[in-house]
Length: 302
Image (cartoon, rainbow, N blue to C red):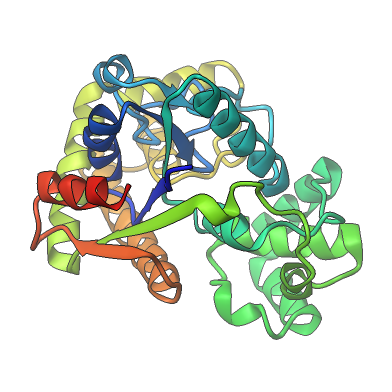
């Protein structure tokens, strides 16, 4: 079997466009590995592939869940395996593409089989976070001092998930990782590629994409979510909270855009810190090499 190319990196780095170029060369189909892009109805705000890109190359696990649903990393791992098997059965080449560190870790290390999602516990913890996030942070610090260095107090999703895992299994999440036993059956075939760039270059990319998202209708997208009674805090993603504040006349559109830009930069910084602490089969600084040259180098591997 040929290697399964798995392209990771921070938001705005150009993972999607590179994956599409590679897919065209190796008769490939793309599997999304992003915890936000799984949802429909928020394609603009989560920078999902455009309709043009979707028409160019088949994509999987993009916009396939409603906002009322959740997917655990274990369930996502099963979905990825299923999609890989389907793509291979049709004589095509699967390509993984995403920026979610937890999914990346799951692909490499597997998932502790006792770690399940509990919606009731998660909702309670999310409510507690909104009321007193410092208290929740200190709780995790006592429970799992080994893991706390990896969790910023403002990273609601990671903080809540760590406490949810403890409350459902009785085992700290750091120990859950060490007990991982459920792995992808394709783990030996993955070929991990990390895309990186200097902060100044990445910030330019982020700013450009943010402008495009506003032009494409992100404000209308958030209006649609609100009209359906879906809580913005429930999907506390970068951009949605700020646009909601603009729609409520709490801030100007310029202030909203600036806040989104700052949060996105901070998110990219956290991603880079996380990804830089891991190992890859190949990494590329996209400032120093063209996407076409990257594709040519990857093709030579198989």
